[in-house]
Length: 77
Image (cartoon, rainbow, N blue to C red; front, side, top):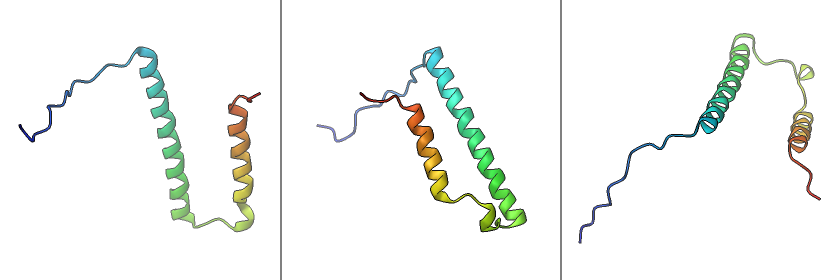
């Protein structure tokens, strides 16, 4: 018996149009988020870190994000 693995089928399976659109939309959102992060990092590199008083505490950011997630999720009875 051969120890070699079975050949792998390398043909791609096309997505239906709705799924392809969803993947493209996700890619666009991800790209926009990456661009926004890059902009913030470039600003920090150019101007330095902002003063602590000018920043939003992480606890407040966490609560805002959790509230946004809870609003997106339907309530369970």
